[in-house]
Image 1 (cartoon, one colour):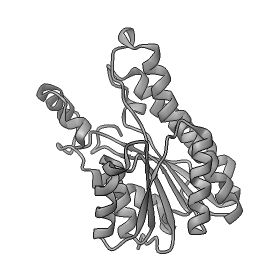
Image 2 (spheres, rainbow, N blue to C red):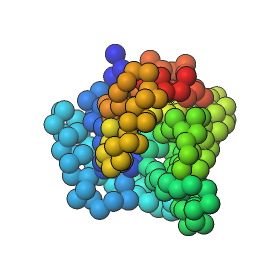
Image 3 (cartoon, rainbow, N blue to C red):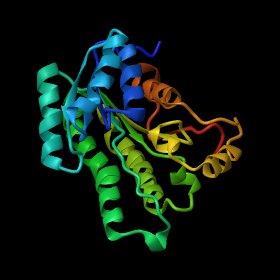
Length: 248
């Protein structure tokens, strides 16, 4: 169940955090995992080791999702080396949190360049390959704040909401070619990003979660694995919420 044997999966933002958890889960299910990230390659070595430790194979690729030509070349090369590209996880993202009146133009431009334009660049390059194979899975990482909103995250929440619109539109455009496009919207997840939050902010967030705990990276990775699998073949254009009931 939920096997990905023989399939090639690309995870952007795959060198750490949620990206690493997704890479490991996909590898454990049998996929050949390509962890792609703009970070230095030595940062990704732990991800590759973790993938190898579960008996899977993979590789690291340096990739700047904001550079469309770089994305096109990278995905074409991955396809050429491996003979296929079955799964794209658009996980690369940044957060520059601030109240609206303190948001800079640079905050806006860079957040949308990575979170939105980056996902579009990757999806466009992947679709060119997947259309010829008449099969493929694209999964975009949105966020609970895209639907719930959150003070201090004006730009981030807007960028993640844009990914939901992207998901629904691409699902309609490419269903006839056998390509499904879905989104996963994590809630409050225990990652390096949330570890740095002040104690009172964590307490407030936990009070909003009916299940009473933070999510773990594997909670999100399991949802991504399901949507990547053959068992999800009749699901497209959907948002799978992984938030402990924070938004229903």
